[in-house]
Structures are given as C-alpha cells and as structure tokens.
Image 1 (cartoon, rainbow, N blue to C red):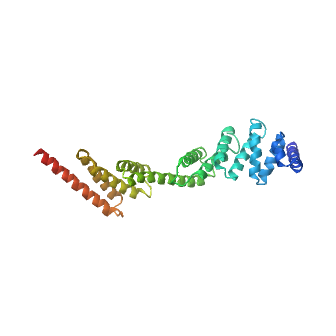
Image 2: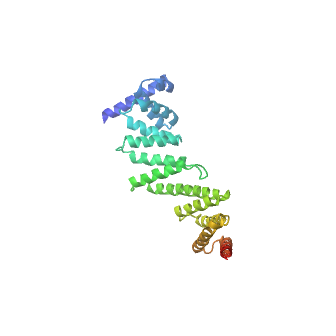
Image 3: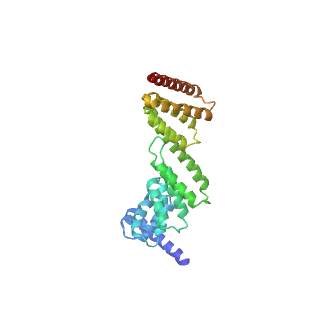
Length: 275
C-alpha cells in the first residue's frame, strides 16, 4: 500500500516537473509513458478533458495488455463522454466491457455505452439507426443487470426511444397516404397498428387505413373491387368498435356508405351480365 502511494506521488512529481519545465506539448511528444499517464490522470481530475484525451490516446496503444490498461481505457471513455464525443465514447465503453468483463466498472461501462447511443438519437423525423441501437443496448443491459440502480432511468429512456420509433413508423405510413400510394399506405398503417397497439396514434392510424383501403378499392378493376371494398366495410366495423365516439366517425360512416353503394352497383352489373 505504502509502495503504491509512493509510486503515485513519484509519478505526480515527475509529471509536475515535466509540465513546469517543458510543458504539456513536450510530455505529449515524449516517450516517457509513465509521465504521460500521470499527467493524463491529473488533467482528468482537473476537468481538462481535451488534454487528458490526447494523452490517453497516446497511452492506449502503448499500454495494451500492460499495467494501467484498465484505468486508461476507463478514464479515456469517460473523458470522451465529458467532452460530448458520444460516438467515440460509446465505442470505448463497449471496448472496455469486452476487454475487462470482470472489472468493477463493467456494469457502468455497459450502461454508459447504451447511454451514449441514447444521446446520439436524433429527432424522430431523421434516420433512427442510432435510436434502434440504443434500444437494443438498453434492453441487453436490463436483461444482464435486472437489479441495477440504473433500471428506472433505463426504462425511462426506453420509453422515449420507443416513442421516437413509433412516430417514425407512423410518419412513413402517412407519407404513403400523402402521395396517394394507397395500397402501400394501407399495408404500412396495418403494420403500425399491429406493432403499436397502445399508441396514441392508433385511432388516427385506423381511420387513415380505412380511407386508404377505400381509395385503393374504389379505383380497382371490377374483378378486384368487390373483395377490397368488402375489406373496407370490415375495417369500418373494427374502427367503430374500437372508437365509437371518434372525431372521425362521420367521415368513416360516409366511407362505409360509399363502399356499400359501390358494392350494390357491382352486384347490379353482375346481374345484368347474366341476363
């Protein structure tokens, strides 16, 4: 214990002498890796993370598999997080957890890797690749550490991330409706409804699926129209059963009436053909 403290004090003294006489740049360019390590830790403790990061980057390659490696990787990843370099921090925390699976820091490293992904997750209108990665990592963390102190915040973050994914899926489905690609809209909205049964967008999604199905059916050939408009009437019944007081009820009823009228016309046509 005494030797360890003396060694640490010695390193700090070396570091202080080096910085006082030669400055940070000289230590950075030198081959005195023990002095670099001590100086990196000093800068980290002083919250000078950008300087600490440069030194840690120098040290990572040199100390691979040697003494201090665990500390270097741990503080390097944390310094990156403090400097808001979330992409690199996530990579380094994951690297740490893989390289030191029995470390006392491993649980925190797994959590912080997911947290960095969460911090990179953009608005729901943008690409959601990072959001999906964050969800996957938080879910793995919760499975691996179900008793962790981080579980409440993990659940909170997961709710946020899943809502983004839900909104993204809804926007994609409604995008098809907007450009009048009614078949694609019908399928996408149906997938959305099945995937997110508790979504606050469910009522709206079911209504626009009904409208998409009607538009797709009414513009079909006679051979296909009957089947598709029958599906529309089924969708109307599901919609009314789910939302009997919907603000869309009047318009939905109009779609149903038009569908029934079109089906009646088709039957008349078929009868005329037979005569």
